[in-house]
Amino acid sequence: MFSVVSDRRARAGLKTTAAPPKSNEVTSEETEAHLEQHQQKLEEEHKRMLERYAESQRLLDKYSVMPGKGADYMALLQRITDENSADTRRSRQPLVLKKISDSLTEAYLPFNDDLELREQYINVYGGIRLGKVLEDLDRLAGAVAYKHASDANGDLAPVVFVTAAVDRIDLRSRLQSKCNYRLKGMVTFVGFSSMEIRIQMQAMSKAGRAEAEPNLVARFTMVARDKYTGKSAQINPLLLADETERRLVKLSEQIKENKKASAESTLQKHPPNAEERRVIHSLWLDTKQAQNNAYGQHASLPPDSVWLHDTTMSSTTVCFPESRNVHQKVFGGFLMRLAHELSFANGSVFTKSRPYYEALHDFSFAKPVNIGSILKFTSQVVYSEPEHRTFQIAVTTDVIDIPTDSTERTNTFYFNFSSPDTVPRVVPRSYEDMMKYLEGRRRAQSGKLISKLQSAMQK
Image (cartoon, rainbow, N blue to C red; front, side, top):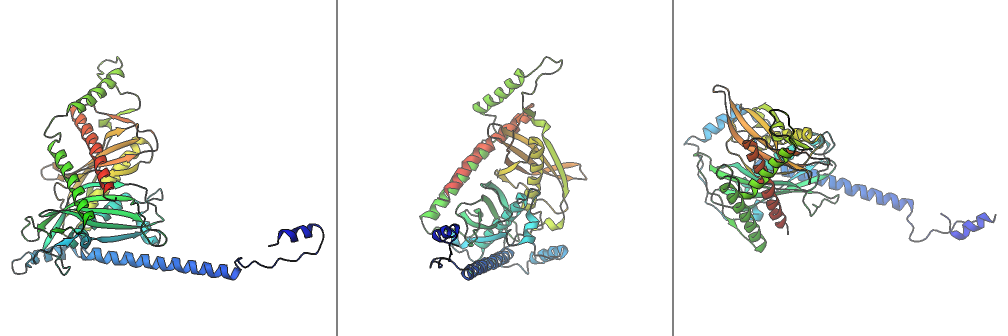
């Protein structure tokens, strides 16, 4: 580098000399040392992240809802039979007061640092498969439940937990394949035999710290059963340490009351209210205005609309032992993943573009699914808001009974998607489709309230 004066002397044909280096200029040796130091820090953080991942996996294995790797299916069935015999039953230790922080459980998904893990989760667009993450959320919720229910020494109590319901899973920002994430779960409400668990997923900075704003927020309801009798089992009560924890519990109670009110006013029990009747009447008027005079045609589709009954897509799967949980039933996260993947496929056909997952609305696991069951998943676009470019897909799960040629409903999932392109308006034609449309509309409205309350929990 030359100074301005020496540059002028050079243009004048005079002898030039290099200006002496300034004291604040960085030499090549210093630059190389700085780069080496920076690289060393990155390698150390990479090592720490993999260690965190390994440690979180060990904790999840301790309080696991899934069988260990290499577990023999028939051996597990025999072990359960032996444990349930009167001679080997373990007596339960006294209940202990647990703080919210006692149930805190973390898991890591280091997509940036673990290429093998990334390969398992990556989708065709280079992003992350949300269905796989849904499985991880259910697994973590189970670990949090078992950790809270453990005795004073941290040992497992003779109870089993099942996922009774999922209140809401909001995706607030897209997940990146070249990023590390932390999943953090904890109990926020405890009843006699049930508990509510809040999980948030946060991106990790290069310095190894979690970002303040979560990418994903989820709420699960877990229910405890006595390991030997199957009856409701009381779990450790919650000790609220400060005002922040009391506020968390209060917000959880608000969500619980909202769910209870929704269940009492369901369309299975009560007819549509006045506002909903106006909505249906308005849709009917739209079809009448678009009607032509063709013989035998009583209704026509308005522009940019699709009949609701024409948006159906289904799939069938056999439940193998690899999809079981520790209770020898089909893992709930597995059902969520398959339902999500079918809804994504249906949404792609519906919008003729790539849909983006926004939320999974509240639902209950009505019945357990046995290993070996044949499951039929049926998806349908039940509600859309073209003005917001969003739509909702309901996915029902039915167990097919071969001898009786009948089906039994186990779940109904409601997924909310958005699209960068135009979203058609779904129009119900029959009374049954009208009820599906209104149910989807109700889910969309109540979901916004739950999302608002979940956001308040972070403040």
